[in-house]
Image (cartoon, rainbow over all chains, first blue to last red; front, side):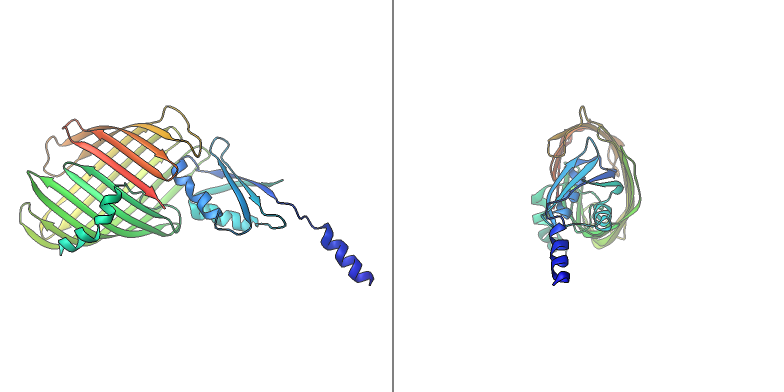
Length: 91
Length: 212
């Protein structure tokens, strides 16, 4: 019984909110070419919203509630789009 | 044989766009570059971050005689440098197919293309150099070189219209003058790019490119 209550409490303490991730990208100077970033991230189920900011060189991702995307997945997508990740920050 | 290629590529021509040799993985590029003296229509698929393949139709016109090529293309991204404020690329270009020539030897034969493209750009500056070499038993070997520089008066946002002033210098086989200068305007919005201009020889230019 104690184990069951403990398990439920642990599950309840997990974040159920969406995660915002700021990805700093190098080489992102052409808005037409950078459309590929948005296209590729939009195919990932856990991603709710994608915002590309060429001024700050940041791709901001927002995940769906209680979902996540790993840094490795982010790196792979950015690389396939033709760019490099220089930093990832999670809010 | 050539009619087959022309018919097969008609939908590409109607798209009227201008290709990047390799884009993002699983992306398609449809392009058309048109001047009165030549045209270059392509449909390419990037199947890996460094490789793209597709179909390419060329037309060269001299004194109302045409040379046309239908090629299967394979492009390779040899080198890329991503910096915070710039990107530079070098691509290797290859193609093999058929040439139908009304110029010189008037024949339909196998044809091959090799070359490279290189570019460097920031959000407001652009420079590119392209070289193509064509060879076929149907025609004497010929080459084409194209250099471009461009400037944008402002940095447009990701989903805003981007405008450029560009100038192109090009050498064409057996064409006078030997160097054709074409000032042009370039615009792109989201996944569509278009350019238009007029050369010092009086040739019009109209190009379009679409990424899917």
